[in-house]
Image (cartoon, rainbow, N blue to C red; front, side):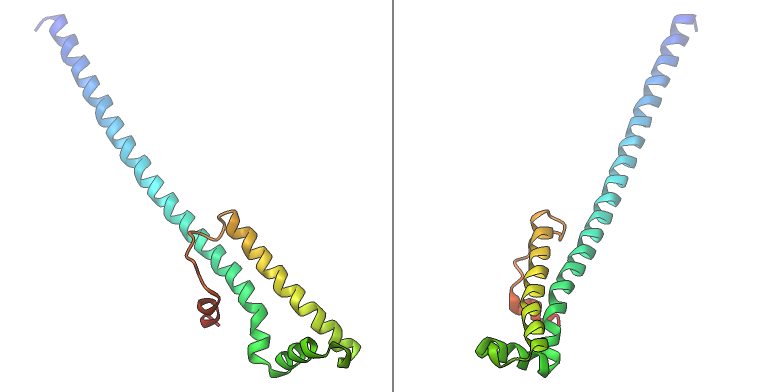
Length: 128
């Protein structure tokens, strides 16, 4: 073989090497991208569970403790009959509920709670 033939074979081998390297690189990028997507979804699901549990945590005392439910009902029907301490407890409960819902809404609006699922209040309460 002459020099030109050797040069052409070397160029062909180099081109094949570059093509194989690009194929390998594309597979590695695809695998990394899939792994990143899975990690992102896991993080979003964790954030969603944390946010939702924060909202649901507000309702637990009303469901689990009859005295809290009685306080809420008495406050709604006749707030003047409450003691100053109970009046303060009654006033802070709706604020906590609104604050937790606002936090969940803002996280949801920013996409921090993962994909939209259309969860209803009834579905949320079943998680308690």
